[in-house]
Amino acid sequence: MSIQPQTETETETSFILPDLLALSSAFPFGDNPAYVPTIESRSWLTPEHVQNPVVLAALTNGSIDLGRLAALVNPNASPAGLDASCELFYLITLVDDTSDKQSGAGAQKTVESFLNVLRDPHCDDGTSLARITRAFCERLGPWTGTPAFARFRRQCESWLKHTAEEATLRESGTMLSFEEFTRLRRESSAVQVGLALMEFSLGMNLPDEVYKDEDFEALYWATVDLNCIDVYSYRRERSQGIDMCNILTVLRHDKGLTLQGASDWMGDHFQGLREAFFAARRTLSARTFGNAQTDSDLQRLLTEFGHWTTGNIVWCFETKRYFGEARFKVMETRLVELNS
Image 1 (cartoon, rainbow, N blue to C red):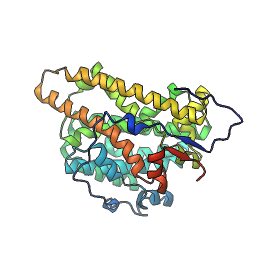
Image 2: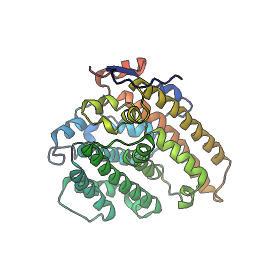
Image 3: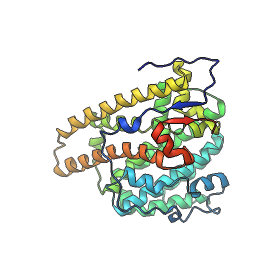
């Protein structure tokens, strides 16, 4: 594909998205039958618990249904697992949207309220976020004492550390290279947090040796990177003036591309990550970790990783969060109007 170089005199008002739906057709697609489309099921989505009215409106005005996202990326989750995933996704979005509007110091204070409860379920710093997080941990029950939960907690710590770092970068106007941004985005996107909870959703607890395996790591990082391609959020982030931490802006700055060139580049990048995923999946399918239960659980987890990629893309077009009422037209044409 011919990639367009950036020209300083160009004023871009639209661009064509890469066809990630077509490129992801090799991944499985599913929909959890336990899904119930009720945003109001999150009882803490009230002014008492979410003080920022802009953030509260974004979570409750019908433009975003994170229960639907949970159902698409976790189609095989138990009802309890689906509910926990839904709760987590609202928590992630609450922290993400709140920190987007804060300074680095403010974002750090926000994330510490969440982290302190994960480290000590009895912690109470008096904030609404701490109370909400305690209620979430109670949903997980005995799973909080497993190695899988320890991995989940570590991922949350890394996510929140890098969320605060991203806020500091926005505050200082610092631009990263593509390689630097990829490393940051792997942690700040919260994709790894969602993947880590997947073991609870599926009722499993894999040993640490699986996560340290070279073949598993190859597939894992391909999954993470496939779901960090945030081309759909560009229009929304640009309108809010925070697109310097979007992959398209990073590519334009780092590689001298036009907006369209950056979008095309990401389509090619997605294809490469897709091939890496399936190559690692074939290798792992022929492997054994010496335990029948571990081998069976791993294959179920890898299938759900594939569901995550397709489900995430589908949800980006179903939600109003990125393209509003034009979302289905954008899905059909892939044309994103920046000033509409």
